[in-house]
Length: 67
Length: 122
Image 1: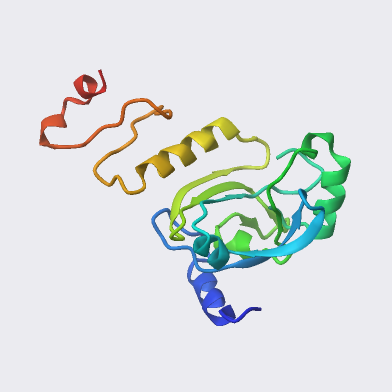
Image 2: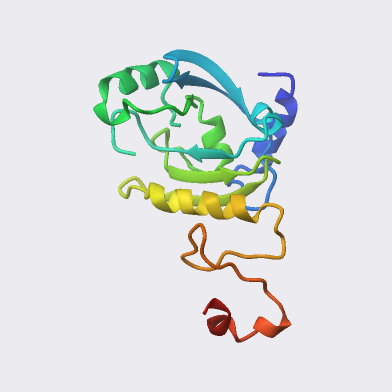
């Protein structure tokens, strides 16, 4: 859990049925594997916002299957 | 991203030839926290459905699409939607009509356009 952990949890429980378009996404943080550097790391929405980046979240059921 | 761990992501990316040119980060959501936030977590299986979401630099969710397990997505359509959203940021008076692609005509909704979208698109 990070510094904004409490806020994160609150945002998630409020949105248990899924965020709707037009809503602000609560900050999140996740562990990543970065293929370009073959290294592990971490990414957060706060950092992406600070860097003025657009974000695409692309969920799929499982590694080793089609996406 | 999926509910697999970063270790499995590494193993898959190294093994699967289709992924050899991947440069984007592969996110791990083993506890399903982010999957639940976006409404794609399947409590029965512990897996995430095929959800695709576009978030702008201000952190607002602008596009959302969820497929069931058995149908894959079309990255061309995803890129089209991303380009439309990028184009429209800071252009609140314009809209991108159906099938809009970069460089094609946008519309500026007004009193004059009511019932005249066909003419406006010409």
